[in-house]
Image (cartoon, rainbow, N blue to C red; front, side, top):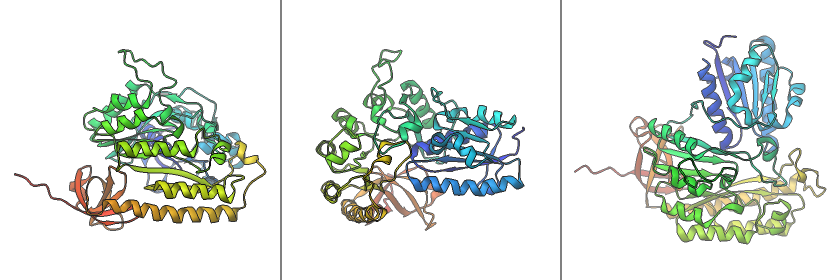
Amino acid sequence: MTTSSRRYHITTFGCQMNKADSERMAGILEDMGFEWSEDPNQADLILYNTCTIRDNAEHKVYSYLGRQAKRKHEQPDLTIVVSGCVAQQEGEALLRRVPELDLVMGPQHTNRLQDLLQQVFDGNQVVATEPVHIMEDITKPRRDSSVTAWVNVIYGCNERCTYCVVPNVRGVEQSRTPEAIRAEIEEIGRLGYKEVTLLGQNIDAYGRDLPGVTPEGRHLNTLTDLLYYVHDVPGIERIRFATSHPRYFTERLIKACAELPKVCEHFHIPFQSGDNEVLKRMSRGYTHEKYRRIIDTIRRYMPDASISADAIVGFPGETEQQFENTLKLVDDIGFDLLNTAAYSPRPGTPAAIWDEQLSEEIKSDRLQQLNHLVGIKAAERSQRYMGRTEEVLVEDQNTKDKTQVMGRIRGNRLTFFTGDINKLKGKLVQVKITEVRAFSLTGEEIPVLVC
């Protein structure tokens, strides 16, 4: 089937890894001659890149799919693809539930999209969920931003947290070679991008599966080594990385972040619970004391660093006292941002079949209490920026106020100020902060004095 003048639309659910995968798949589709369509209902190929971390994300996918399945009865040439974690988890069961689907493909098959679609265009209904060695990224992604870019450094996860479906759907850890990562970052720098975020489901595990020595004899088998290796890429002004695991977070890594000027002072380190017994049942492999020591070490090296994290309330068997321990940790540490969720049983995970499931009412009440505290602590943390001058990388126009532009400070807080996006996009601007909110800032551009 010819793809000339055919249009595609991708809807992405879930994490940064999914966003990066969607950008790569968009690049593959454009190489095949497809054009982007803003309106899914005008597209000839619809791709849903799915997430299974939470129950509600899954339900949303099925409701979107139902609408497009109806459309396919009127437009038989419509191609419907489901990729990502729901695709991996459900496999052929998805086809039984939505027979109008053409292709079901797990995250490990992202780079095979062209081959799989060719099978579809040859008249086949295709399911690709078998474990594979992930091919090197060879397609240029169609990146959503022209200022910041994601770079995958490790796929998969070898952890076995009892609540998490990720290892089942994303497979075992597979690190990309340092040379391939640096080559991609160099290309990003040549294209004018200013910031890269290195991505991994468990990024601190980077390099464990690599031989440890590059062809030139360099030792490059940790995330710390990788940061030193890519730090001097021309054009790149800022480097971030996510997501970290407390079990593997080292003082050597913290020291590198303090030493390397391009690495932003922002750390995303999920803790999930502030109670040791709950952490043990989650199979997280650390205690709340160890987590606190990590944060103390970061603040010793970088007192102003921003800390964000993830937390789950209502884990099976969580007592009121154990929940209070989570609140205490949040109160003591004072996070800049905390992604919170009520526990949601995921298929195929140990915790999903435990007897001590809590009621939705208890989970909802605890989530509300936690979110209230998070807002208070984030607002307190924001106060330190008042009156300060911060470097903002301008990413876009403020959609709610077209006279303003928006970007992020090195500590990752969203910041707004008056300016012309046509002149400022992609620029690093000094901004004096005049207004602080829990999760964002407003300021005024400080004019550059030209002698």
